[in-house]
Every structure is written in structure tokens, then in C-alpha cells.
Image (cartoon, rainbow, N blue to C red):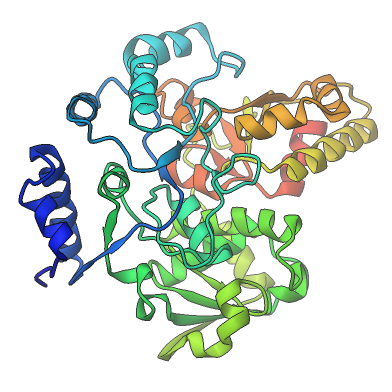
Length: 427
């Protein structure tokens, strides 16, 4: 195990110059870094942080006690931060018993925890989203900035699409980094750790489904860094809204179906544009993906519904949260699908999830009434936290999210299949 070399300021914090609580925070970060071979700490240079723990789960008593200790000692975050989505929304369909379990047995500490987050440095009451990097949310990192974030889908997006530098931190560790303003220097924070040890060649005859492509790569490379060739032919060489939305969904799947914290896309992502194939480490392995490989991956997804042939009872779209443009696109597609099938409302209760700030923006446009007319519910909820309810988890839920499929009993379908299900009642 490496021994950490601290600066005089860092050592003074560890020695208690700023109080016992901050000393414990620094000691935790030092132990964390040494476990991964870090030999030094580096400053957090981003303006804002992001926390993964947003839910007031009854079982997390130790977290609330820790928060109280930090607040009492004045050891609040040195940064304002966003936080993952809330676990409940009264507008999302749930039975009486499901709501009872949510409110009486699961998320009983939500209100008091929200207040703790405010005291610790929460950006604002709209800053609950897994897609904190969207412009409407106001937590967009800059290239080269060192972050102290958690939330796997946010970390991989910040590292890859914006060229920021962040480890795949756990909950609380990311808060500690924001509190003291330093993080251990290892892995994806380092130049060497950002080298690709896999080359992924995309040789499909059509645009690959973002969620499936990410799933395939994540399961193959696990926690390695892939350098992806051939994807730019499908999503272009400009990081516009369409490309970013694709990479948002793609990256979330690489991070949840594997443990990818950074990917490079040839001719598109910033480091790949600047450094090209010099990012590829010596001895890198190669993974070729064609249409047959993507179909093989999908065909091997397990179905864990009690009745595999059950009629879907609920559909979630937006894990990670949808962008504004994705909301508009889905609204138009649902309208067209309903018109084609002769229906006025969706055939399956359907929830679109998006950041509160994007929801507010969307609701100021004519699209909001158009979406409401289809019967689709627009929410800020975290679908994963909703599905953690053991009663809700027994429902036959469908989704276009590989992250939600991985962590819950929800069943994955492609965007086209989902659209058919909700507008026609069949795949």
C-alpha cells in the first residue's frame, strides 16, 4: 500500500488544525487514496460538487448522524452541490399499499434529510437529478477540472464528454472531497489512468441503440477505458445536443452494466479529438461490435418477472433523466404513434423523468399540454428508487434504460419497442 505524501496544509488538517471533525474527514480520504495506490492529494478545482445520496431511507441512520456531526462542527461542503433525484413523487402511479410502504417504512427521513442537504450546501431545491451536467441544472464542469462527484452516470459523462477528471467515488466520499477541497490522485484523475486499454470498433449497418451499445461495452471492458472507433459515423463529430443525449444514455449503460468511468470516442470527445490514438495504451485489446453482437447481448438479458408473459403495468423513460430535446422528441413520437393506432391515450401508464429545472422549462412550452393530453406523466423522480419498493418491484415494469434493467426487475426494450408498447399496447 502506498504512503500518502501530504502538503503542509493537508497535513495540518489531518493533524487537527481545523478541528477534530475535519481531521477525520481528511483521514478517511487519505485511507481511501492509499487503498488505491495514491501517493498525493490534489485540489478540487470545479465550482460545484455532486452527491449520489438523495434519498431519506429509514435504514440510513448512520448517514443522518454523520451529517449532523458535520453541520454542528461547521464542516459543510466547500462547494455548492447538486444531488441525485428524489425517490418519490405523488404524481407517479402507485397503489395505496405501495405509497404506505414508501412513506411509513422506506423514505421516512426524506424531509429532514433534505434540510440537512440544504445546510451542507445544496445548490437549490431544483438540483435533484442524476443529469446534473445539463445546462438547465447549472452544474457543467470544464475540461481538466478535478471533481469530487459520485453517481456513476454523471461521473462517466463529466469525464468523457467534458474532459473533467473524477474518480468513481462512493457516496459520502464525494462529500468529503468537497468539504476539504482535496481528492486522492489516482486512476481517472491521472494522465496514465485515462489511457485506453480497449479499442472498440463499431461495424454496425445501422445506428446502434445507445443503451445496448453501452451495455455491450460495459460488460466486455468492465472498469477499463475504451477507445471507440466508428461511432462518429452515426452521431457525428460535433458535441451538439443530439450527440450529448446519445452519450448520456450510452455512458450510463457502460457504467451500470460494467464499471466504466471514462470512454473516448474517436473524432468526437475532447481528449480523443486532441490526442487521437496516442490515448491508446500499449497492448490494448480489441472488441468488434456488429449488429449480430448487439442482438446477442440483448437476447441474453434475463427476464426476472414472475410471469414472463405478463402485460406491462408501468413504463419508465428517463434513467438517466431526459434532456429537454429528448422530451420534445418523445412527445412528438408518442403523438404520432397514438394517431397511427387510433388511440387518444397511452395504452400503458407511462412516466417520463427529467430534472426539475428541465421540467420547469418544458412546462412553459406548448409541448407540455400536448404530452399531458397523451396521458404520459412528467416527473422528477428516480425510477430506480421507486422500484426499490418491494411491492413496486413486483410489477411488470418496462423501460428503455439499461441502468434500470440492471438494478431492478424492470425489463428492457428498445426505443422502438417501447413506443409500440405504450401507443399500441403491444411490442
